Amino acid sequence: MLKRRYDEARLERYGQGVKLYWLVDERDGAENFSMRLFEVEPQSSTPFHTHPWEHEVFIIEGEGTVRLEDGEVPFSSGDAIFIKPNEKHQFTNKGDKVLKMICVIPLKGKR
Image (tube, rainbow, N blue to C red; front, top):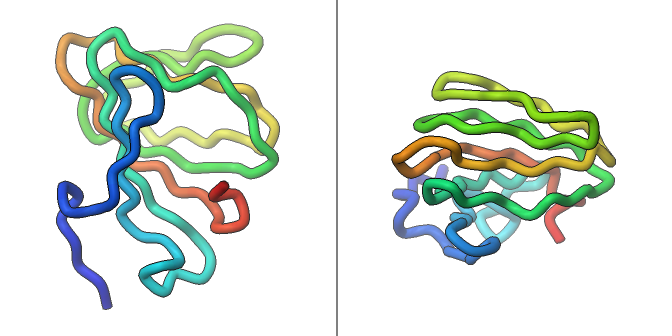
């Protein structure tokens, strides 16, 4: 069993105004998934990108939009979002407070 506070997890910068905390991954003994926490500053965004794996996102706090190739979809705290493999996407914080979201990805898609 592992218990860790998010602010003790490995931190990466993921674009301007975006922090990515690796909460659980293979270094902790996970065999199938990585769990990450993103903190996105107001009016900041993740890169507009794609990859060959799915991921699941849960919005803890904040509000914003997910940009897709065919438009934007608004979200707010309590929403769950599924991004399909190869679906180009970008998360943008449209609020005035830090956006916090959990993102789960398969270990095969980690890098």
